[in-house]
Length: 106
Length: 122
Image (spheres, rainbow over the protein chains, first blue to last red):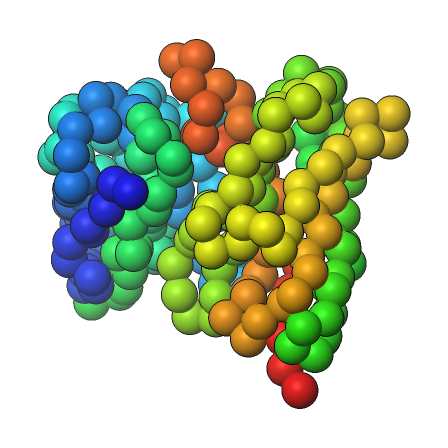
């Protein structure tokens, strides 16, 4: 099983600031990585797939990068609706998710 | 509108059974692999099972293998998860999700249902 490790567990950011979330795979997953946003009481929502392709309807302030074992999700200027938990997920093998990064208001 | 709607969750005793349903609408259900993913209270997402578009191939996480069965009725645009021999650790919100085959690979999920809650407790 590929283990996905996200850091930090919690990120405190002020509205308008930039947020950078990291995700590491225990072995290479090529670019077969997705990012999801989950708000309390809601289902996950796809943000990024293929490590860097924004999903349909995804705001341009979200961008993904990386390949192999190291990946990054960047939110260029945090809006109030962006405070949520973010999960990375690899689909190069049997799908596995990271434990999540909570983005909270500073 | 593309939509997935789960139902069938509830409270069940350890050792009991439950069948979850996921009704799909707004897209051609028969074209897609489908998944079940669960989330225990306060925890992260865990993949449970998947099924091919025509139902001919299924896969399971080791934690549910031999106890859960995924199936689909393409005539009814509905996905199912039959859960037997339930344990306390199966307590979770269960989501169904669509697989768009990003880059021709299985495992990505672009549309999710709102989830249905399963509680296993005596």
